[in-house]
Length: 241
Image (cartoon, rainbow, N blue to C red; front, side, top):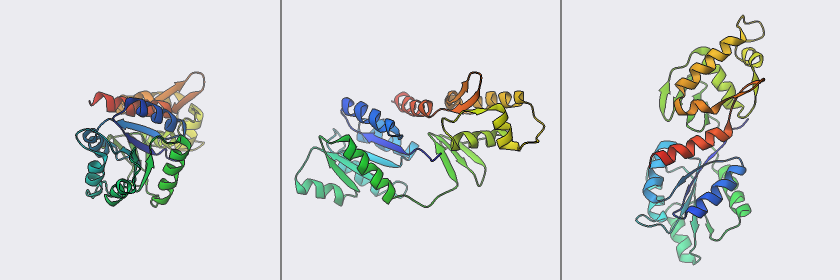
């Protein structure tokens, strides 16, 4: 299953945040929200989203200022930005584009058009495949076999790494214990299904708040929950305020 891309939505109107977040999540995106420019910059540093939807008219720091800061930073300059603006004059739109915005959409907007613009921009800015697979704040490097949680390395055993990699590659797919053993060790590996349960318990501890994203499906096995991952991102963002 392909990586679910992260959208950072920045707007000082709570109704817009809730409405757009809900609809983009229904399209399969992870959505993180910020209500001001300062918070946007903090979230970008922590999560490095795939795309930013940035309102122009915000108090204290405008969307234009935020865009300029992001585009002048080597670590964030390649993140595509779509400006959300109530301004319709040509000069206002040109100003946003001159400061580095990749696209713009005028409020009020159609969700279908917004989604189409997002997908088109992500296709245009898509980079060559890398060895890192992400799910929320979990990043798995298949080449170095390192796992980062919110940017910090965590130590997993060989089997735990293989189980997590299986889950991250197949979000929401339920695996039986036998399927997990077969996937990580092959058909003839002498391990009991109970060993899988032990690994899952330890992985949940190591993943801290994200441990709850490994769901037990009663009578079947385990899965990594897309819904839980999205909820955890939003909760992390809320807790940091």
